Image (cartoon, rainbow, N blue to C red; front, side, top):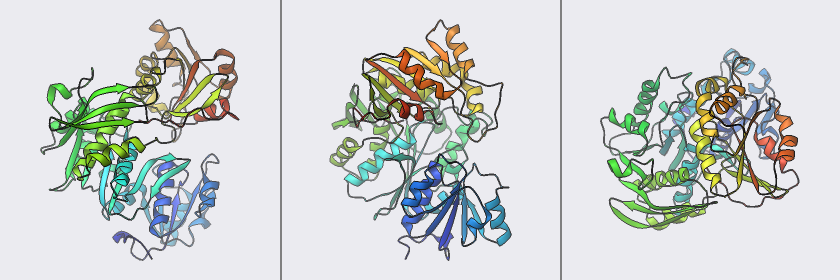
Length: 478
């Protein structure tokens, strides 16, 4: 018996998920299982959580094979899966319906009171914060978010009618989603291999917000230049949020509807007052560090306010939030050296993560693995400038992910930018597995090592702290 009826899935009992090891697809598989469908999945990558999915009752296969789809009525596939994939080919041959992840997100969004979180940065953390607030307020939300908590992707079905959904732009998935409340955290150049220029990206974000129906709410970052550019051509009212008194904030200049005041940023958390419509309504304590997380928290609070959640539950929900895996996650300590891992893979995210850990007062050693050749080509100079915030930097080879190798693009170009700025404490170590021994030799007690990137660089953090206990449960976000 399905707990929620999805109109487009009428008659479907069994769903096969191709590319189930990716975090978004894993979350999808878990979500569909929670709805009552029988779910199987497959992935080529042995580094994906196939074994864990099996433990959790999902029939997961390592490797793709035509036989995997035989008993399915629907096959859902990742944007990273080519159309020539043997499972997709088998489904077409057998007359089994296929659907992209983006299309499935769209269908699911129509079956709930959907709150969608989009933007270049901060989606996973903001969605997680919002879900925590809604749980505090008794909403019992469902969650379909592109991050992992405790090693598992967040695809959970609650008893309430609200769905908190992370709507990403890289494959245009957010344009399939229909939301009662749509949040834009920020808008900056990213995925420019898909979007021809910045205006095309802005227009896509506008369309995402325009899909909000009359009576719904569009929530936008009033501090962010890109988000303001999106709104300038939107033609509808929005609810804006921001941070007052921040050097990079536009909150004081243009005015926001809900904002943070009297912000105190600490090594492992922050405290701020929440101002709504010019009136300060109370203080919020966060257990995740960084000014960027204050912005994420205010965004979540703005959406919660639009859902009529009172301040008591907003404050309690934000205080309870402990962060997602790989978002300023404290991995442990060895020899007096603290190791933190972060998913930052865009220059703005790298700079935010480094700014957050500098509050510890430790010497900061950044270990960065660029993600995607296209992104490295587009932003190698910006990465170089962002990494200047660290006291020492180690770079390793680009993690190509879905892209073909490109010998002309490499992390050494980032090192060249840094050296040209007079920064000498940078080393390019092409083999990632040479890093643990190098770091152990070069770092001293009191240092902080932060691994940065959306690829496999977290495995270096794991290697450094193997056998060590975590020094703190605190985590961050972005």
